[in-house]
Length: 489
Picture 1: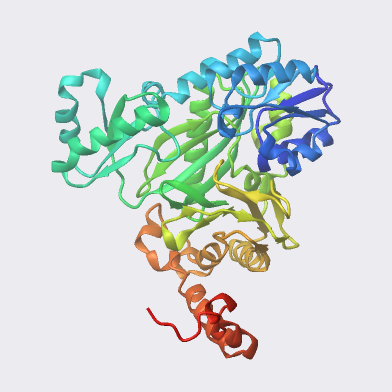
Picture 2: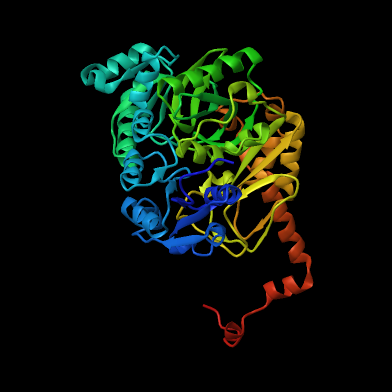
């Protein structure tokens, strides 16, 4: 085990990723400190951490975005490093720089790298300049006066994207060029609202693409390796809900090409720590999409097939340690599938749901990354993801069957989730055959429509009304009304 220059790490995050990080810190013999808004005071992460530092804000999210409070918490915990997890400030260069200037190690890449890859336009230009494949595009700031005409020249379909975007926010698909200017106005407005950045670019839209990403690791000695790819094409509203590795879409030759391209991009950027290079895959051609300069939500599937603890590697890289393995040492074993359990209603447009977790029982035989407890109140204060269920088996079909069994055995009462929705995807012929793309769920709306649940509810209601106690209760006249006698209005 590496000797590290710090013994305490502050986790600037919450929920399941905080729990995940704490587990590795314990394994490494390190102390964990965590920031904590009052709504998370009884969460699993707070109970597991060695130290919890209260933070406050106008809203819970505002508290977790308060850089000054987080830096103060790191000092209070006598931490030597800060781990941002994912989301919140994990890809904020200003935060990374503040952490370093305050004397702490930042567990992530350099602030300059975050700035480069966080700006979609700069990242795209950097990748293209270094000779890697990008889709045809028009960048507004190159010449604002000709932006629309240059976009039209690419031809439909087009994808309009904010420069500072992420999570699908602000993106617009344009299949009819007469709607291009409206799409640009809407995308600009959302980019400004969500990211404080109204700059745009338009690129060729690949119909029915696959979304493939590659996990990379880099150290301070110029070593960069990949840990193979992840298939992330099962999405709703441009956001992933099922991820797996290996991808059923890649031949061995294409896998080698796309993984080596990811390593080349990371090496060109002098990338240090864990990161993910994302691509759009068409018919045997792929284009750079973006690079995420943090740990991904779906990192567990990579850990399952490689046996490499990505959080531990992040800590080692931040401590200035050299990678302990070369590319040839990394082997892919079996197949892994991750399901994102959300508090949402797929049959009602994926709206977030709330409620108190009255009963919670996770299935055996699979990996569970969870940040909730029985008795916890689920609110709309944060992202609706509750937990991740990860199945690992020798083959893809076996992994899908194991994941299907697990999601059917999950018990969570008190808050509506997407568990049945995930089960229907796993049982779908197209999914099992690997024949899907990023528009798969839009093309198959029947998967989101929970007809069985609505039919079951009607059946249970009819059955209940046949029971005498329920029928008598329904027919009973309240005492106050009975006192009125036979009076009619």
